[in-house]
Length: 296
Image 1: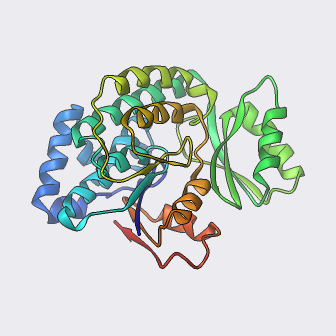
Image 2: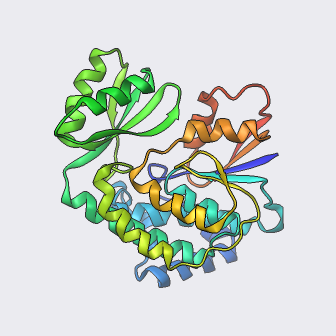
Image 3: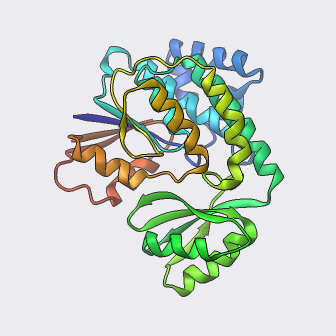
């Protein structure tokens, strides 16, 4: 069975989507349509912007969504996954891929999500950091012990990497304790703020209204959602999980394991970079997986 996965924030790079724009008329049309929908020339920022330009949340999220969804739509009838999943932001790309969201509606939601999260980032000095070679239960317990600062386990990526998220002071305190407990390193990530933490509560409330007022269609295949790591096929359930995702951890390792358990044998990453391909290789995926490919 074919499983298609879509990357989230952190996969961006200068020049992303340019070859697609130059080589495929349909892609060019969709990029220009996106410029009109967003009200600014995001294509130019993707193709020629600086690293700093691309790391602004309000740019990064629609940029990655566009790269992934335009790639998917240009694949035409050859694109027929048995299941889909997306890492954080990538879940919106997955929902366009399985026909649950229209491209235009997905882009509107991603733009609103990005603006709401950008605003939340500006209200708090916060961030994220990747912790390597330490048990996720130990990481979670250390985060819970820190008070009154907020820091939580935010992304369960693979057995040797869990990402923490919270206030900068909270992350600094956690870093000291995590290293003392044997973590190999705690590496700050180049993101705008504390995603998938309670510090995103205002952003979640803002996005919830937009999601509730957007029409979702019956999906053609299951989407394995970050909030539960389980497959969803019902529109209202998908909406609820998508809203909950903003302040809850991304259960990516559990998602991949569940997809494999349910029959996935071939994984295809669609979007900028090869981050998910690298992560999937580090998950104990057993010999049932035949291939992990990337469509850039």
